[in-house]
Image (cartoon, rainbow, N blue to C red; front, side, top):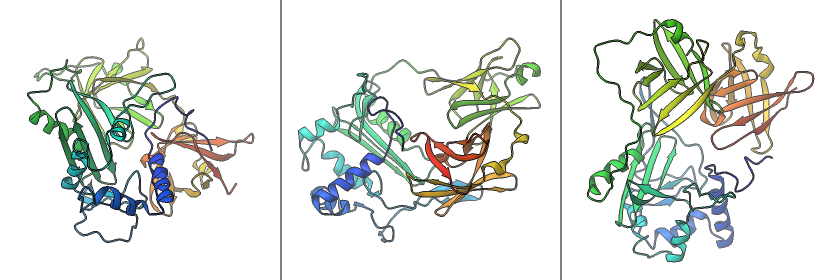
Length: 396
């Protein structure tokens, strides 16, 4: 087993610690985590419609199921686990309001615990990243804010608290496309409009309405075409069709790019723009994505002949000792497809030599490993929360 990094060197969001803490509580109290929280938190706070769902067969009255959009409308987005600590909290907006009010009118806990919960963690280099114990501490439009969101399957939730104003906003949704955090802050902007401070506006992407169409030489546009890696496993693919540039990010739909200038393009449907960095008339080596006040650089992926790749090299059963689980990679209709006993099939798309991106988020990047005889012996899987999780090929 490998660590993502040395403890304290970096920050990466991970649920594992909270799952382990729930197990610690259970063993020390000799109660299930669901029983402990009911007796010591939910009942004292009169949160009568709240529980930790630790039995996937249990029927919960008035339960809201989650959904995701589909070409034919909506489909259920199903959870396939019932572990607790980091997840599986069933509650209502009204009940969570009682939890939020407990921070200012204490019934459960005390000021020492609450102060510890909101104290930002410090990395080995002395810097902080805003994360405390299960909460994120920072500023919103000049006001002190403590917040956290949650997302799993099609559920989207967000709780933000403004302790100085004794004001909280809670937003729940059971649609995967809903942005609960954005909606929560729209509510904040209305209710705290007299207290929020005007901040310098972050870079906004705007395209002026203009009847003139900016004509760009297709020879220039062709230098923008290609795949650009924003982060491991996340590729922005730029294509050109009849003089129109389009962009497609990993696991997202293709979108049109509207001309702002020769090198800048508005991403349609998103508050973002892409800036191509010229390379003396040759294929650009990298682009910049401007979004949310940030500028992120993506380098061109080195081209190679994908047609020459023999996908059968990567087929077989791959076992992770750390997860004690096996994925089977097979070829279906010319695509490498991952199969698992508990999950739907998903494709692995070739992006670099021996490197694929998975259409399931948890298989963000798959890098296959070869031995001295050029035979695939295993692979490392990485995503936003895990780096180089090793799977050994078991049927060499």
